Each structure stands twice: as C-alpha cells, then as structure tokens.
Length: 598
Image 1 (cartoon, rainbow, N blue to C red):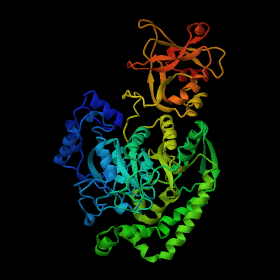
Image 2: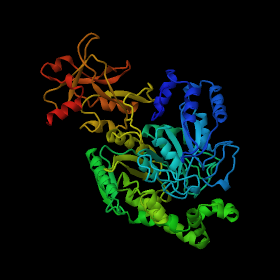
Image 3: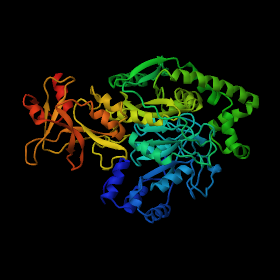
Image 4: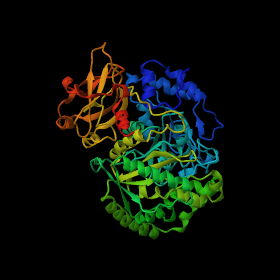
C-alpha cells in the first residue's frame, strides 16, 4: 500500500483525484497505525466513529471538490469534537460535547477527517508538553528532549508525518513553541479571526485556535477554511485593517541581546538564521524589547492568571486534587489578586501595547527566536516553572499585544535538533506573514518535520486561483535573484519549482544587466532539455505593469511544462541567441550563475 507518511494536503488530494488511494482503505490503515500507548494521543477514534465521518463525506454532493476532501487531521483535546470526549488532559474534567467546536465544524464541512484527540499540558497551562496524566510527549528528533506545549500531541503528530495538519490553541505560545521544537509551521492568527467557540478556555480574552502544518501553503489553506465571524463567540471579529504586504526588502525588528539561558546551540542557530535573512535582502533593525518583556510578565505574574481560574473555578473547587500539581499551583495564584489589581494591570497592558505598536511602526514585522532554548525532559522536571517561563520569553507578549504571528522552521542546530523563528506583525497582517513565510520556507530547504521528505517540487493540483496569472520565470526573476523584487512588489505568490518540457534550450544573453537568459522552444522532435523554472501566481491587476518592465528581446508567451501543463512564461526572440552562450546542459540559470563564481 502507498505510504502517506509526510504527505502535504496537495498530495493527499491529488492521490484521491487520480484514484491512487481508496478513501476508506487508506484512512482505516492510518487509524490502525495509531496506538493507545503513544503519549501523543488521549483518544483515538474507533473504526465505527471513523466510518460515520466517511459515510457523511461520501453522501455529500460533489464531495471530491471539497478543499480538504478526505484529508486526515487531529485535534488538541481542549477543542470539542461532537460525541468524542474532551478532557483538557484532566480525566476528572471529561465531558462528551453534543456539538463540534466551530473550527471542527468548518473542517468537517470542508471534507477533513478527524482521527484522534491529542495530548496537551493540562488545561493548556504550559509550554513544555510534560504536564499531563496521559504522559510526557517527547521530541521526535531526540526523545530525551521536550516536544513543547501546551499543544504537544498536535505538533508531534504533524512532525512525524502522520497527518498534514492539526489544530492547537495558543494563549502564551502554545501554537508556536511546539512548532519550533518540531521543525513545523505554527500559525497563530489574529485574535478573533478563528472562532474559539467549543474550546475549553485558558484565557478567553486571549485564546486563539492555532494551526500546525508541514508547509506554509498548507497552513494558509486550513486558515482560509477556519476564518470567519461567529456570532456564537463573543470574541470573534472581522478584519479591521487591510493587509499591508512587506516590501521587496523588508525591515524586521530583532531583539538587541537575546537571552539564551545557556543554550549555545540555539544562539548559534539564531545567528545563522539572521545571516540567511540578510541573504534574502531583509534589513535587520535592532530594537529595544523591554516593553515586550514587561508585557509578557503580566500573563503569569499578573491577574490574567485569574482568567484561567475563571474558566474552571467550579471544577477546581470540587476536584483540585485531581489536577496536575504544577498546573494547580499556577492557577491557584488567582486568589491572590483583587478586582483592583486586574484594572491596574489592564491599564499597564494598554500603555505597554501602545509603546509596542509605536515601535512596530518603524519596521515591517518583528523577528524573534521562537524560543531561546530547547531543554531536556529532565531539565524541565528539575525546575518546571522557571524553565517554562524561559520558553515564553518571545511568545507571552504576543496575544496580550493583539498581534498576528507565524512560527517557521529556520535551521537545524549542530546537535540535530530543530530551531525555529517567529515573525510577528500587527493584527490582521496574517496574509503578509504567510506570503513571506512561503518564500522563507522555499529557501530554507529543510526536511518536513521529523520526516526525511522535502516539500514536493511538483505542484500536483492544476488550479490557478481566480484573479491570478500563473507565470514561469527562468532567470533573473527567480527567488533571491536581482529582479525577483518585481514579483514581490506586485504581491505575486510563489507556487513551486518545476521543469519545462524536454525540448527547450537555455542561453546566457550577452550584454544584459543584470545577466539574463533566453529560453527557446524547439519543435517536439528537436534536441533540448528540461529546464528548471519557478512558478508564481501574479495578481491579474498587477500583471500588465510587470510585463511592461520586460525588455527586448524577451517577452511573455506560453510555456509547456514537463507534465503537459501550459503556463505563461518568459520567451526569447530566436535571433537574439545567435551570439549567446548555450547553457542548456546546466539545466537552469542558478547553475550557470554558480559556474561563473567558481
């Protein structure tokens, strides 16, 4: 049977559409591979519960056209799935909801299939993945290290390639820290963009449902399914400002002297990440993070802990002894704060947020290490509160400041563990973060999660979004090349790396600045080769201004790809290559540029 390990959403959908896999067979096989003694799971759906979903999906008209048809995922066990127990990692709290959380309902309508409920730090209180009676969730790269939390099971299930995406929650970084520790993408949306109805609250005013995925593309696809105003959620809201995309050379604010708490590997990985950012043309601006750090202290050191108590007050009064000792101790701090304390802290929060927003106006986004260290399970056990606090250094302030954030895999540390970065922007700038994140992930060229797979280079779903033109670029417009900014400035979206059909020849044109190639198409029987190209989706309204920049002898025509697709692409007048250098044998423009540097 075809293995689905590490598949992206596009790969799942393409396999269904081409009848490479059977819906019931593949999902039952996958479900059967999940074992109850795996600490990632709190509840694995039964075969009958899976069949009920499949029956409903197959009875849906035009089901195969649904954006997530048959795509498996898992859900953090503080988010309701109808008729499936919700525990919040506390057995005494268990209840069986009648209805799905709004996010789960939207995914169900989009064709996605729930396989399991995942482990978490109890009541989503922690960034470590160790505070659960269902067991510690270890890191898939090295089992002696933590997975991060509180969305531990949701993150590791994606990192292991079992599912292409999962749902977590994020109040203090629970959707970002585990992403960093597992080499996956963690999307922390603007508060209220996704409904929190049907989620066991941690801090209702700050909670966000988050998305873990192997790729930024998949995170974006799931986010588009989840977004939307929900009258059942008092904190749901609609976009207040339009997206402001980053310029071709963005300015990112970074902390002046990051604290690493003795983790030299993370410090070295951060320096390498900054060098890679600079290589992409990003300008790094050192700013004072003091107001961010001060704001972060309010989340657990101030009266916001009372929000956690408010969420489960009745339960704690009756079942405090059934709780994790560390979690109970943290939440019991709520009794030391008064209503006056809460208002004083809120005024302080507002002042700090104004200061932070003013600082952020001087840059396009903040760039931070997602977490300053990656501790072992034993290190957390020895000092659970202090180590947990250190992990939230760059995450705790984000929800309090009403920011959007995207956690991205950055580099692999020298010890074989992953290191992640997070981009932070104003509210409702989620799309700008996603757009940059796609470019970053392409250039980072890391394996997907803890699998041995790279992001697929062949884009299998032959659908160009409405309002866009799919364009193949072959030379100076490639990612990282001098004219790529012309695409970025027009809000073009990177799609994939792929190849032309085999009857193309590539030439280095003389006397061009910057250096440019000429791509010539022969007839079906002519000699040639498959030439590497990038595909970009260019907004239709910006396509004309892009074409106007193209100098002779180049132009835009129709290009045939190696899989038979036809897209718009750069072509060259035949007479222009008379005195040009034939570089077809190199297979692409990057190889030619590299050859000049040797």
